[in-house]
Amino acid sequence: MGPTPVTLSRLRLGRLRVVRRRLLQRYEHQPLVSCLAGLYGCQWRRYQRTRAPPGGSCCNKVECASVALLVVTFGLTLVFLYFWSEAQNDYNDFDWFNFGNTGFWFPWSVVLLIIAVVLFAYISSLLMLAVCLLSEGQRLYLHWAHKIGVLVTLTFAIVATAVLSDLWSGEWSTLLLSFQVTAPYLHVGGVLMMTALSWPIALHFFRMTGRVRRAAALGLFLALLLALYLVPLGMYSPCIKEKGTLGPAPTLIGHRGAPMLAPENTQMSFEKAVELGVLGLETDVTISYDGVPFLMHDRTLRRTTNVWEVFPNRTEEPAAMFSWSELEQLNAGAWFLSRDPFGTASLLDTADRVRAQNQSVCTLRAFLDLAAQHGRLVIFDLYRPPRGHPYRDTWISRTLEVIHNESSIRSNQVLWLAPELREQVQELDPDLQQISGSRSSVEELQQKEITRLNLHYSSMSEEQISNYAAANISTNLYVVSQPWLYSLAWCAGAHSVTTNAPQVLRDLLHPLFLMTPEKYRLMWLLTDVVSAVLIFVFFSFHWWRERGLAFCTGSRQTQENGLYSKFRTEMSDVWSVSSVHAHAEGRSLPVTPNLSVISEVQEPSL
Image (cartoon, rainbow, N blue to C red):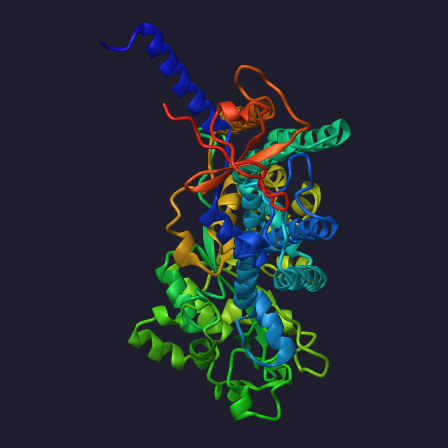
């Protein structure tokens, strides 16, 4: 005779109760917890660690301070890592700045980035371990070696940020610019992190005692969450555009040629830039002691020539104090292969390496003839010679003489940047395109007949670029070498950029991070809604589980002063509330008073 309907109903009810009990049980995954506690506090053995009692603190005061310090260190290290990674556009300037102070070349920028990545990964791992231990209900104990590591990392983050802020404060403007393209994605990442943290927060919230503590914890969490949800209301990005409103890509001007593919300010560098299809060529002009304008960016010859070999006693002497016959003796290319400033020398083939090795100092005349031959614009900084130089007061007229009488370039191919004696230059040659390096009013620029602005990329402003464009004044931004920065300049409406990396930017077919307002709003709202739903589910689940643990299901629901029992299962320890009717569920075992285990029962067999 088969089972009766009543028996089947009781059987199903018993199974449902078992499922519910298993859902309510907190499983301590011994291998996982051992690994977490071992890595975090070197507590590899079970007796070395303890669970956080229900309603109790997850750590003592010292460990709470350690966790707070860990969170602060994580925040500061994250800020520095983001700051330094977004500053890659200017790594070359940073390395040469250090070369000028130390006298030897070393890629300090890359080393600093590697250190920042390693330390951030270390701190992030510790913080993740702490969150996982909290999720498992374990008390936190940070090993003393990790505490020292946290202090070292915190010191590094503070000192590095302070030093770079003092020596290179302009990079903070780069950080602010980067938010215009990365902010929507940083918002998504922040929301995801808060959503993940809501699991251990909900667990400990419902185990807290005291209404004030619970209200304060919940209020702080919800305030941070709401602020994060509403951050997009204050965001601005020129790369959030309606379809059809994006202008053409900014044209490229080779900064000292193509300095990633050849030694800067050499014939080879400019030829490489022309091959890459740049609109114009940028350089720096100095006049030799005997009146020959030549190309040299630095005040001395130490960085880009072998002057220490040919003239060992004149390495700190201004480049303008050398005669042209002396300059012709110098090699201006070997340094590029030995120092590899951009890490790109390995990309050169054998023929290019031999060619780069034998580059010499380039004259202004040769530079202008190259530009004229290929129909390129030219722009250059013109340096006034030092005191005692024969051409100190006639350096502008000598440069104009080369442009008019010694080279084949047309005047309208020259973007005249030097602000000195601008009116006289305009009278002598009105066909020169006047370009200004200062951001002035439209009226003032029109009065000076300025047709183009040459501005540092940190002063980028979509509104100002648009205002200048309305007055037929185009904007060139320098030096833009990173794709994200070029994308931002493209979205902001810049007409051209001066770059070290024309070989990279020319292949960018559309701006990075470009999206329509509708797509952005959808991403924002979808992220916030999904996060809110998940957080609600997490809190609801922990509320339901803690409520079930506090009031056992059965013939009678009781709570004996919040007394928790520990159930032994085959794979893990389970915490639950003791019941006054435990004998009805299984066989009672002897109790050892000195142990944390109060009673052990067996699960009812069905």
